[in-house]
Image (cartoon, rainbow, N blue to C red; front, side, top):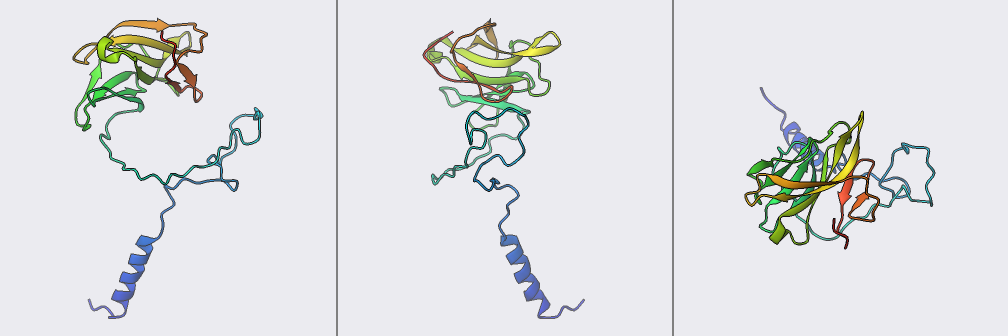
Length: 198
């Protein structure tokens, strides 16, 4: 097959330019007012103040590097660094994994309470006790099965030295304390550091 000498360079330039075109498919879209949320509200509740549900986008000028450690973690939700560089990563399916610093070794920790992982529920966040190096205590939030639904609950337990199991699990039910949880999303509790220890 013979090509016209003009078509090959023209086609090459076209392909080069079209491949350099900015791809906005993964870019953060913003509304006309600069807000991150561009969809319609999913409720009829009125915001307490203008802009409460339409936060403005923030762009960083700080350089950062994205490095994928592992793509096979199921449904990861919460993550915390251990003192030795490993990670504890919750999986919404109802368990917690220990992941090596390079992401290559993943092992499931046994002994966590039963979790209701339907919908937005599951094993949610994890946090280390301030004295974790000496007591191996972790706090975690999860969807506890209750009746025909679930409750978002907080518990603590002691990790074994080999990080294969958790014991001495204590569930904190019915608490009304300004403790160490905040409801960030509908069912997505995140543990935060405060001066109150359970």
